[in-house]
Image (cartoon, rainbow, N blue to C red; front, side, top):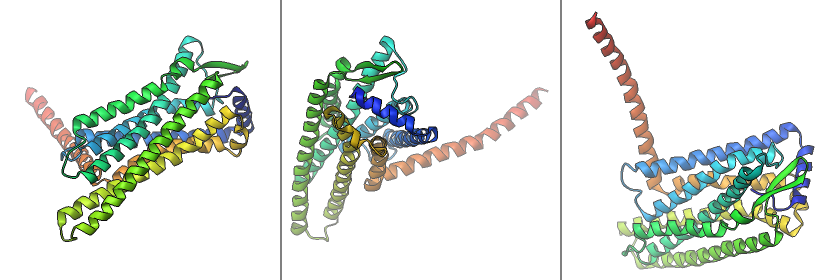
Length: 342
């Protein structure tokens, strides 16, 4: 979360001075709570996939979801200290010098990587569903190809965010206010045009794929009898995953667009009107909520994740109970050994 316009930073600092300390603390607490929930939920997804006691999560779809959870968890972890900086410190970048400048560059770099990686991973899931529906008896996206898609999602987002390692810098706005920003507005305009192009292109591709998937599923209903159990199971699974990814797409754009529009408005110079009535705070919370909603969607529409979560929690519960039962036995044994020695 960077300031792209020094003038908007002054206006935002003035707004924070108008807010009471209690309100600023409340805003900070809300953002940190959302980020903490996002981090915990996505770590749970990673643990469930890592354990996978029943070996039902070794599919391309599960690995791509894991990639999204990893990006969401890193995004939440990275933004926890920045929330304090943006609200409590009123946007002032505390660390100065070369180390502070390095952190400024790294902050912007990783923020952009997470956003673009999630978008490209959703696109990869859409492609996987397209292949599964149109070529149900052929395994197009193998595990090796899936890992290649994951690598490409991070590699592409790294290329996209790499200019921030050069252009992001610290800028002193006033004597008591130093912000992390990109001073060259022309670079920001080009960057936002490229980002908009990526988001629009992926949205068009996903819309085209899912329109084709919907047509295919509709035709399959006419070609096969409802008495065929295997066909019904496959159709139900495809519909569930289809619903899951459509919701992920809608949630991603709804949560991301407000903050993106605000950032673009700063570059174009009309951010004042949009940021009134706590608009920036609402946009930031919506961006953070994306990482909270995604794991809920995974568990709602993917039975393998639900079962994996239940099994993992059951294993953890049994491990704790067995450790609790064993501990008194160990104490009794040690006491007997001590009495024998005496």
